[in-house]
Every structure is written in structure tokens, then in C-alpha cells.
Length: 341
Length: 293
Image (cartoon, rainbow over all chains, first blue to last red):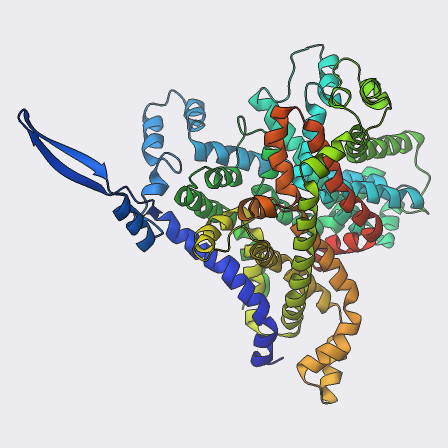
């Protein structure tokens, strides 16, 4: 295919991505350097027999005019990045200087919205991703050893938690873990603590969200590994068996290495998806105990006066996070594409 | 693992069945529980005292004389006009899937047939775009959309969803087209077809399995989206997911939680049917990217 034909085939999709992904990206970056206009003040000096006073009033017309002329706002450079809502350099330096201990420093960082969100997001990514891979593998191994008819049924039901809208899925679980719901009241029964609530403490909320995350994503890992299991070479398994490998050794030394590329694939997809964790926080109404980067962007946009600059700044920081997360993958792909000379 | 293996010891067999049963309950029970409960009154659905009430519907019987009631559905669909949200979702999904597939099929085909270096880079850029959380882009849309007066409209949201879906759909179709032998369209070109004619007469007839799979995922992305639709649509044009989210705010206070439960169940049913009829395509789609590595 020559360049010209390629161009025409690729043009529509490229146009869509440039207009609605690439351009918004640049507009976020520029928005993050601008703050909303301050009101234009009219300063007048009013003198009466007792002396002179200056009085300032808001010039609405001029303010509107300014907003119309420069919708982005006024240029503030990195000011928004440095403020308390984002990287909070001043506060962090302060905390560091007055730290009682390292853990004390970490817990005081928790009072800053951005670091709080970052903390939960990273914990979520780091905990959920390996658990998803582990559970997916176990489910795949278990289901694969079932009878043929049961397999299809299990695949059908396993797809549900993954396919269902994240917000809807988390709402369903949210109602069940409610103190009056079946799981919530069941837990109270088990621990014989009538006041036990999964929504009340930060730790339990985090655990709930993580359990939801594994429930939602394990099916994906399961399906991928299950498909991989169908292609495990039988000869290798048989020779391992003849050599006296136990079932467990067969799994560790034959099956898992065979699935290794799939593990990398699942890990990549999971890293990307878990980093954007957002809907479960809305669904579980968990924002008092856990916020994520996506959630604080959403929260800024959802305010009465949309805090676009603040949202844009968090967006830029989130995107930098995504790129850092992807770097190992990108480097690997680059190496594969450019074998060493 | 394989059928010709020595028979498993009983303990292992029990362990496997126990685990599968546990996973089955974890995966399926919440849905059945909520579907069943959506036909009860709130005091049955949330029955703190005796959980069997949620199954038997004692209070529902007391209120309506039957152990099932469609009151939640009536409240959600008619009183709260959930049907409007359902229609909007149908419109958004239909046009998003149609447009996504049309342009991604062309793009994915081109990527799979072009051996040039830039096609690799385009795929990498698409991967990075795929990794961006959609909500990060949303704040970039608002100012221009206000300016052009297109905020809140369905077509705007459809175009945005198409664009956000592109990277994923493109990857999927790219790897699908790579499985179609190049010789097929090359021989058509030898016979005097242009590239587009080769695509039209040779590739289009054989591409449907891949396109249907990509369409399913494109549908799911549009159907399940919350970040984009919640911010970009106005009250009248809301789709189901943001509508459910706004139910959460209003119904909790008015004691109409059952409206939200009914709405949630209504939103699950199409997905249920989707899995029922397209299980094979969904599985093949999930593994398509993986097999390629």
C-alpha cells in the first residue's frame, strides 16, 4: 500500500483522534497554565468631611468583556501546579521539615487532596493487578478441568461482572453491603457487631473497593488465560508427567511459562484500567474515605462553577502518570521493533 | 488438565468443584439477588431483621397483596422518565458503533497492509491514547463546546465517544486484518483492482466476524461510559448510566431507592442478552489482542 492510499484509508480515524483526543490534550495543557480571571475592580476615592476613603466596586461589564476576550483566563504559569489542591510544594516542604517520623510525614500528606488521591490510586493499581492475575489463573485452571457443558455455563456467568457497567456493578454490590443489605447484615451477624459498617472506616472502604476491582476484572484475566490453556502443548505436559512432575509442578513449570506472554498482556491492560479507577468510588459513595485521580478531576468539573483550570491541571498530572506507567511497555516494544545492530 | 491424564485424586476434585462453585456464586449471585429484589418493596429488599423477607417478600405482600410488584419499574420508567434515558442510550450506542466501525475498519485495514515505519508509530500513539482515562480529556472539551454551543447534545457526545473508542477499535481490527492473508487482496490488485476495489470486493465479504467482535466492544464502551456522558449531556439528553447516577442523589432522600434498583436492573438486561447471544465473539475478542502478544 503506498503512502497516498494509506493516507486516504487512515484519514477519517486520524481526523477523529486528532480533533477529539490530540487537540483536547493540548487545550488541557494550556488550560492548566491559566487561572480564571479575577473580577475587574473600579477603585474610587470618596471624600467626605471626615476624610477620604477608597472604595472598590466590581465592574461587571469589564469582567464579562475580559472573560469573552480571553476565555482561557489569565496566564499564571505553574502556579496551579504548585497550589494546595495539586502538588502543594509549600505544604509538602513544611510537612517534611516538621515531620515527627517518616510515617507521620506520609499521613500528613494524606490531608492534601492530590496526594490522597494518588495514594489510593496507586494502592488500587498495585493490589488489584496481581490479585486479578492470580484469581484469573486459578479460575481458569479450575474451569478448564470441568466437564465440557459446565465450561460454557461458567464462561457465561463469569463474563457478567466484567461486562456490566462499572457504575451499575458497584451499585449492586453497594446495596448488598449496606448495613440492611444481605452481605452487610450477614457480616454483622458473623462478627456479632451490630454497628459494623463497611462504609464507615477508611480501611474497610479501601478493602471493599479493592474486592470490587478484583470481582470486576478477574473475569477478563480468566478468559484470556482460559484461551491460553487450550493451546498448552500436550507433549510437554506428558513428558513432564513421565518425568515424575506432580500436578503442581506441571502447572508451575509447564503451564505458567506457556501463559507468561498472556500474563504480560493482562498486566498491561489492567495497569491502564486500574489507574483510571473512578466509577466504583461514585457507586460506593466512597469519596469520604477514598478518592482517585479520575475522581478529583470529576469533582472539579462537577462543581457549580466548573473548576476547569484545576481539573485540567490534575488531568495533565494524571496523563504524566499514565505515560510513566507505560514507559516500560513502550521501551520493550521499541526494542522489539529495533533489534540491536 | 487433559482428558487422558491420570484420574485426579478425590480431594483435588472436591477442591476444584468447591472453588468453581464459589466463583459461580460470586459472579452470578449479586445479579440474581438484585433482579429478584427489584420486584419487592424497599423494606424487603433491605430487610435487616430477617433476610428471608427479601426472598419471600412479606412486606411486599402486605402493601400490594402479592409478593411481586412492578412499582419500582413503574416509578423509574414512567414517573422518572427512564424510558427517555433508554432511548438516548439506544441512539448513542447505535451511531457510535456504526461510525466507529466504519472509520476504524478503513484505518485498521490500512495499518495492517502498510509495512511502513509510521504505521508502527501510529499504533503506539493509539496505545497511549487508549491508556488515557477519558475523564482527563473531558475538561478539554468543555470550553470549545460551550463556545460553539454544542454542549449537551447527543451528536456531540456520539462524536466524542467515537473518537475515544477509536484507539481500541483500531487495535482490535488491525490485529484481525493481520489474520486475513495479504495474498487475497494482492492478487486482486494484480488483476487490476485499485486498493479500494480490492478492499471492497475481497476484504469486505470476509471481514464480518472481526467487525462484529469489534462492534460488540465498541458498543460496550459506549453503553458503559459514565465519565463522558455525565459531563457532556444535559438533563434531557442523559443516557442510562448518568441517569442512574443522578437517581442516587435524588432517590436516596425521597426514599425511592427501589426506582434506582429497577433502573439498574433495566440497564443490566440488555448486557445479559448480549452475553447470551454473543458469548463466543466476546471471548474471541478478549483474547484477540493477547494471542498476538
